[in-house]
Each structure stands twice: as C-alpha cells, then as structure tokens.
Amino acid sequence: MHTLSARAVAIALMLFACASSFDLHAQQTATPDRTQKAGEKLREKFSAADIDHDGSLTRDEAAKGMPHAAKHFDDIDANHDGKLSLQEIAQYLSAKRRARAS
Image (cartoon, rainbow, N blue to C red; front, side, top):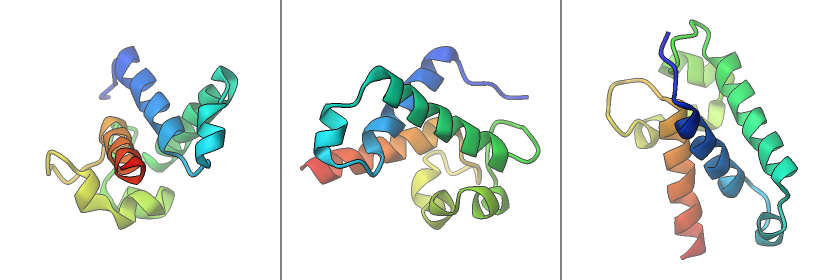
C-alpha cells in the first residue's frame, strides 16, 4: 500500500483547508481545530473513495467518491499516470486558491 509521508499529509490538509469553499474572512480566522477538521474530512473522503486502498484514485473511484475531483481529473493528475494522489489534489486546490486570490 502506498503511503504519504506525515509532512505530505499535513501539507495536503493545510492546503485543503485554505482552498475550501470558506469565504476569505473565514479563512483568515480559521482556528487550528477548524483546519484539522477540514483536513480530516478530506482524508476521510479520499480514503472512502480509494476502494482498493492503494493510496490513489482511479477515474472510477473519483467519480464514485469525489465527483468534484473526477470532474477535474485531467487537471489534477499532474504526473499523468491516470491516478490521483492526495498530494495532487492538495496541489490542485492550492493552485485554485492562488488563482482566486489574484
């Protein structure tokens, strides 16, 4: 089973919290507990969608468990291996957040 390093998971969780649909004020006033809960939610959704527990999502797994990721699958799949990792999703969300801030 492919596992992410603790640092990669922490970064992914922080990026998800920042890129979530909260308004700017909510992002600026987010508590560590709120950030942790958002990260846990992402990790739970990813884990539930990862049917074969290999640490990545196929198109089918994404479509069934994370439809937003499935909709943007090709944009998220940075290394073009046909799978989405939690890190790739976090990087995509971070890029979207930066684009919105610009």
